[in-house]
Length: 492
Ligand code: ARG
Image (cartoon, rainbow, N blue to C red):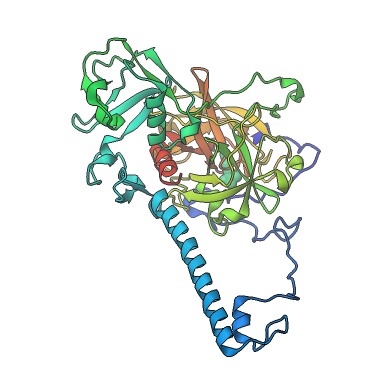
């Protein structure tokens, strides 16, 4: 993060391997993949080294069948040998069959191949992007009649009525946490990440609701919901699937005077993504299992999850030791990411083991549709990126306030001359001086609204750092939330 560029400060600095070429315009990037050769030529190898073992006294069923004598020295008759071989072979085949069945059962039961989503329990799979897209693909239309979303800064639960082709808030009458959990699960959250469900007065001016029909009997939640103009309680469901966007009262004691070093717990969703022990990119925790980062961070040759380790709840790079990192299980880059224009520069990482939340590790909220941010909303950026252009990554986490720059302004001839797509957000200052920089990529652009912190963007690109008329460009998270939920649903 470049902050009032001046002489580089002292202290441990780390070579930044997350650098992206910053030629302007990005369409003319010389080499979009300017990472240092992988594996990194120096530094401790993060991969444990195994010394090949020389087998000493091993025997296997196959060798018994081939050897004229057993290792114990007892001589078998050819008939006895045959029986032993047949018995062992049958045993091996049976064990194999059992293992294969278990695997197959898990696969069939669990989900659909290639990030597909199953239509109810029908066994039919459809592509995640076809879920809730307004066109029915499932045999019984489950993809269009199980559509739920949280709307606006107060998390109002809405259900889509495929009949009326419109979203309606859910009336609080007869609603309970059990239904809330079902709705959260249908959005892509895990059953156990449910946080709260409560009735609140709806100020959106809705005159029509989705209401529970309790006499519908033992049917699916969505079959119990019907469109109605009456809601006796006069309140609608506000649903929180995860306790996100909150932070503890942060003591800013450790804050360096005049600096912008982060205090513990100040940006609890910020993670540092390492490759072979080196910070490469930032990321943001959105659930115990998922991180949002930039697609350009995980381009070839770094698209394999095995390369990556995520560090959470640690402010200093010098305190990030391999053993304390979280391993990555899966990386999903946006299918429409364009490495030359940096359009749709977003990716998801699924962790091998879930984050354990505490005051230093917490998720940020994904923006809901209908959030209505100010055109020049104040936001925060954070990261271990360079503190001046062409500098090295910072040992300590830094943060700065930036303002959103309206697209028309950012696309003007003097700024980025129409390189900003609707999937991008500009933030910073046209006068320069404060900006994200190399190594901040993938990290958060967040804002506070209704006492909740929301992920507005992920650090993507910029021409140089902190230069006048060259603000930072971020992936526009509101454009990607549907895709994120679909991926979480398809890759549980
Ligand atoms: N692409 C950079 C990275 O990989 C982030 C650059 C942000 N640049 C800017 N001027 N805001 O870390």
